[in-house]
Length: 259
Ligand code: BTN
Image (cartoon, rainbow, N blue to C red; front, side):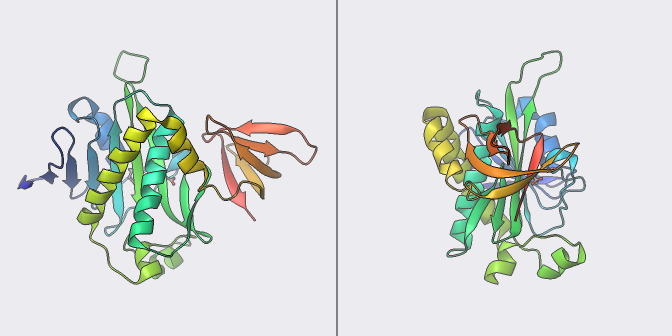
């Protein structure tokens, strides 16, 4: 059922409690959801056709021209930050496989989705803390999926990235994509709540850099090289250094570069 709000957005009620809100343009769907967190039902999905201040991980910006999917999913149940991002990453990769069958997709720890050596989707989970309250009451999982941008966009902006359209030759309907993504997110949210280990395993198996040598780029300081040995239950990357010592790394602190 579609109902049109003439001024700002189209509202699509997909389930009894949750909803999809489609905005023509916003600064950032994550920012929008965090600001309206109290009034958005659990499992709501907000998408924007364009973002003026799209946010990426580690304070980077996320270029958001019209044509791609910019979505944020509202989580109100108590999950860990790592679990929140697994929901986004596993759902994104499921959708990409549906829209680009036969194309190999994989996760670059913590939550970038790649095909070959090109990024096609990114996840940014942000916790919500009510004012005057130091405990989080949920999170917003931001999902950016390159759906319809052309190759020249990535070339012009010197981005090592691609889109579903570049990979398949097909133009994709963003609203239809968002409706299917919403179902995937709701399903994986349910799995995170009822069988967290199952979701962790589904996410971990997509991390194909396990067992390979990688460069670790910290927020500050020097780059280190090591063997990406494993991923811990809490989502931390377990790195074996050339001297044989082991280090656990957390997603906020470092980025991984593969060779
Ligand atoms: C990254 O790979 O750095 C994460 C990118 C996340 C981008 C999405 S687009 C929808 C949502 N709103 C934002 O401002 N960011 C996320």
